[in-house]
Length: 363
Image (tube, rainbow, N blue to C red; front, side, top):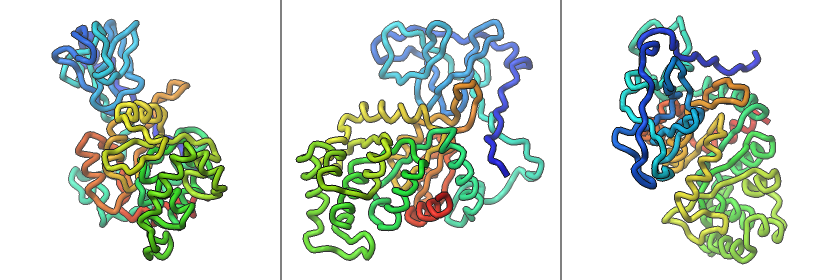
């Protein structure tokens, strides 16, 4: 069966209460980076703003915790820190049209006839959930989005600590199933450590046995990359032929390495300014159609909060943005859902098993 994206069902603006809703109101930003009183804060659901005379506009790139600025008849989601004095900011804190603002949470809800009970068990992914259907759906989505979407991976360093998972992730990138990679200093450092020393944090990436002076390996990697000036130059100078970072560099896949207060080094590519890193990550959040986040709780929550639940495509159609969070702990997905990213789907499993399974099934 050919995979098709679920259709988007827009709100019915011809019926009450939306047909009688007032136009949204605005107030000027009182200063640089300051929102006016009663500003409207966005979600990652589709949001519509009534401009008057029955004209409702869909915010093209809504995401969590932004404000909406009206300019020349267009509405844009903007981080409050980016506001300029005098920007016309949408105000109102109701979401059902009372103030010309409608948050649409059911655009991709299917009209299922087989769900007869309002109460059911296991509505969220847990360690007891069978994930066969989740895997099959994800395979279909990735095959579709390889050609028609933008697939973003958010990776923790655990992916680089195992020989098979590194090879599987490399294969996924080389097969075209990655359009951008987001990580921190650790993922890149330990992936390069594995390329140079076949270790991760000093342990053999296959046998997991400690190597003599292995605790120096990641520090040596950091020193080498800083000596050569970049990851790309290091790969070339040392003749490295495999690994996650090698696959990205070889295929021209953009990656964003966000800094942390915990970082050693860091690598030259690591963005130390958190707001600069956030801005660059948002570039990929706006493009994303599928996100897979593995073994990195804080990074998952951060990118989940900045990723819309939908995307308006170039032809004007509205499609869902799929967000999968893969972790051995249920805490990660619960935390992300509690922060507002209710569309996040959990696969509670060891990430090494997940990515190896995915690679074998896709390639």
